[in-house]
Amino acid sequence: MKKLIELTERDQIKAYMDPYRLDILETFYKQNKPLTVKLVADALGETPAKVHYHVKKLEKNGILVLVFTKEINGILAKYYEPTAENFVMRNRDKKLDSQMNMYLRNNIESVLDKEFNETKNLFIKSLRECPEGERFEGHFASERVYLTQEEVKEINEFLHRFSRVDETLKEDKNRKEYQFLYTILEILDGIDDQEDE
Image (cartoon, rainbow, N blue to C red; front, top):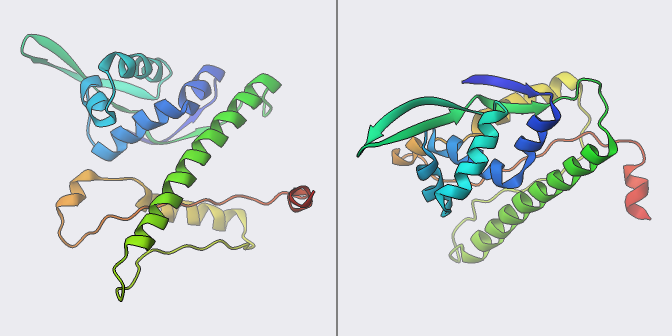
């Protein structure tokens, strides 16, 4: 598995940005091993037929790869894994047509909304259920900072080391489970002005 793959083709970007397919990819990262369509379906509580369709789209676009097959009770089980730890979208001519741009924006908004709401709800639930007198172990910060591009890269690389789930670490009694969510984005000129309108 590579560290990073750039997705440059329209079909690749559309295949990757589908929220359901992102859930499938996250299942692979959480399990940290090659999986069959059936194993992914079981983890997501879905039917294998639905997952199979999306796995094939991911495979066709170089996001998943078939790594080996194994015969189980006379049936050939196919094991897949992601082709990279990270994917980044890059349009070759540096601009997207309006239809593709709208597709990406809508899907990014949908993914962000889902992730932020799930984390917010988990944070609030943990806060409310923290026994009285015990220290609450949640942390939240939102700050405007001034960084160079090199500092942004360093921060992303540092945080990325902690952002992939390795299910095998559950067995380590010295580790506790935490919800991890971070964003870092450049504040473009005029964004604050638009928010006030």
